[in-house]
Length: 241
Image (cartoon, rainbow, N blue to C red; front, side, top):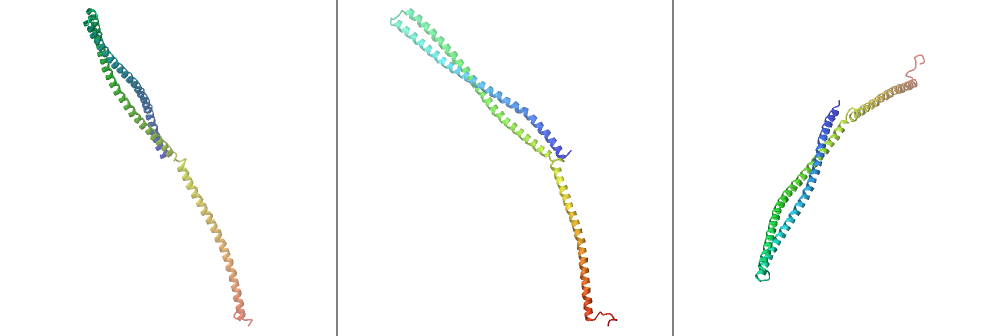
């Protein structure tokens, strides 16, 4: 197996494993964030309700206190009327006593409302603490989710790179380059061969032309030399002299 293919298969396996390992945490984190946001909505709704009850209890406590003060004022007025002779003293005492009983009842109701206020305020503090915790967790896990998604992108990019490296094997780029080198070498050798053949042909033609040229020149020179000797009588045969 080609070394690039081996590297790719190792890298591919690691990339797939990394992605498989990351996809589930991503989905789980996304679901966890959705759940926390639902809890946040519920907590905010509960906080609003508890605050509303605290406001109502405070209003009721103030109302009971006001009623208690009114009943006390009425008891005083009844006693004053009896003292002034405007009504029977025994009737005034009876009604004033009833007014004072109503006063005590309203004071108890006011105290009960105050205790409710303290309870609601405690619940408000607890809910606000829970809300702060949920918001912090949501922010934390949203950042974690970004990190996980970034890791997936890196793993995907690594897988793509390994895939490209795997394609550089005997059937693609490296093989193609080798075939190109072989082809160029073959073409260069063929060109050199044709050059040698051409040179051989030119050499024979040159020898032939040279031989013919040299022969003609020698014959011409010999003829001219004989003619000159004859003219000078230097080379005449002995019988002719």
